[in-house]
Length: 79
Image (cartoon, rainbow, N blue to C red; front, side):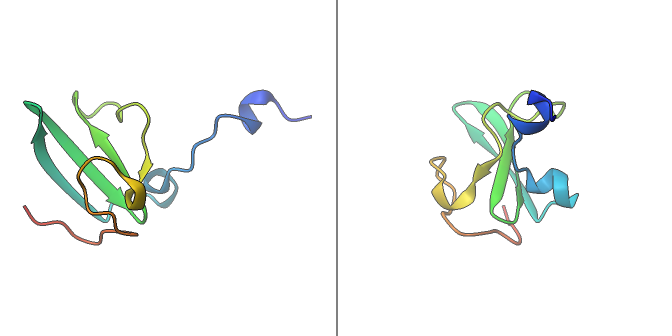
């Protein structure tokens, strides 16, 4: 028998599972500095330091609503 925590609530996180970051950049959003990290088709954001990823992440890049390119993946970022 599998426990509830082993079955439910798992989030596919490519940064964690692959142990790599394809690209990163920092920008200001509503007077708050936001760091975005990308891996394959997902991204995460940090707004309050780097201890924890913001809630509701990772998200899919192709369907983002944060004014990021809606691509399948990002391999490099320039600022």
